Length: 140
Image 1: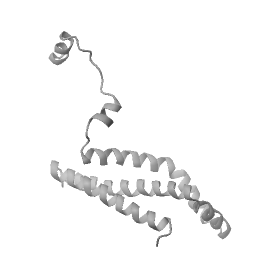
Image 2: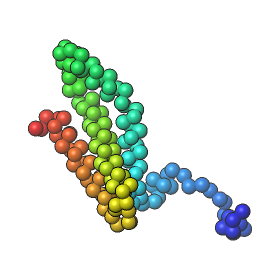
Image 3: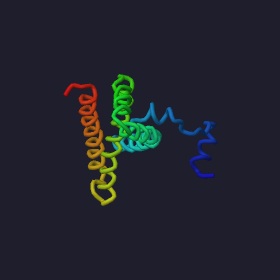
Image 4: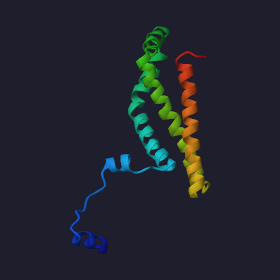
């Protein structure tokens, strides 16, 4: 056993693992950690919904009648919210992927630049999602 574990056991304090609530509620995550976590979540969501999106696309280009049918379904507000969430997932995953490509080329690797580019990714993906929301809900 390591010295740290022996010292903790001598003092009578129990050894415990860090739980998910400790990580999410008690520790303040830096922007780069938030972007990394959201990048993984958005990739997973896109992976789950990809068969549905391919099916929807295939059905919508089959004929004019099927396009009108699916356009009616997509016009429902709940479906629009789901599509907005998928749009955010795509836009965030895309922006974070570009950030990772820059980092793979040894650009913006120091702590300050990494945090700054993470903030840019969050801001750009949210602004693009807002534009999609405005278009989706008929503002312009």
